[in-house]
Length: 405
Ligand code: GLU
Image (cartoon, rainbow, N blue to C red; front, side, top):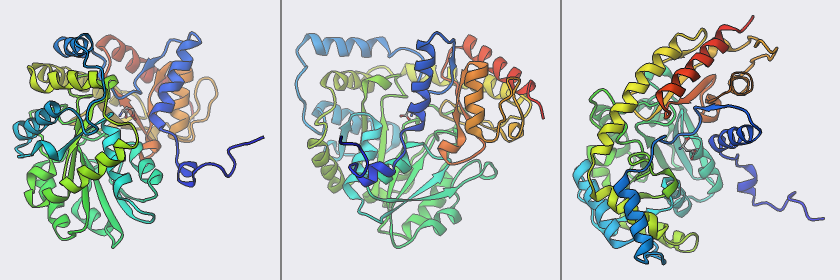
């Protein structure tokens, strides 16, 4: 009988499955067996895609826009993306310097697969989104993780960046607002990182801006290619419609960067998935070209939820949470829970145990910080209606309050 032993690609064999999807799948399985679970695990807006965007998708189907598109995306969409970068990020971009992919994840995958050779290093500040190191691993590269604690607001410092760069460094990944911490880099913080990068002309920069519009307290979003135009020739600025327009299932991500890189990514995508869904591309076009009031509404809604959730989490004995400035995640230290025992007798010896016990004993799904490279923490996605959030926070407080030891 043929088994997987020795048959899997060695890079895949050594990679871990997506930790976020593992929790999402567990929640689905528990719900299918009748359990009532409040999920604070999946990082996606809980509301529907704006109506005019839905209509554009339906109109695309009805008018027969259901065939292959160009691999790099519809020209009209690429032009709309170029206008978006000019309008929102002050970056003059030619449409040929953009690429449309099947979600933001494919932008990252394309870029790393197109450029990494075995042994090449990618600098990743931790906490990081679960998929960065795994994509690096799948592409044969080596992640160089730079721990960034709560003391620096979970942000990479210029010294941290400088000391992580070696002669093998190929990429540095930046993500602001951050998944999982909600940390936002200011213009001056990006400026300081850019100064370091200017001293390393062979290093490429991947700026994951997918949470651009979910930014609170009146802060101004800014991205490294905008802050330091001299880096433009080696920055891939990545974004997508998923988070900004509640379109996670439509799977449209995009990026802009140097033409040689965009061309290489297109070549790779042409041998893999081809262009993204034609229907989704028409919907994304309507999202980028249409009214933008949805963005402001969801921003103020998420800010309100953030305030409430963080306040409630900080009332739970053993949890401590900084105020995130963007995205829709709270990243709470659960150090005060470690070593305690639940009412059902489970010993909480690490954050994954805390997540499992919260799910099994309190019916609340979260994701463990260790999956994001910092433990012991819990990532709490507050992309849920107010009533469920209040119930979930109550259940978390109750769980924490009932621990012994
Ligand atoms: N980015 C989201 C999250 O972190 C979606 C799941 C994923 O692709 O990891 O929850």
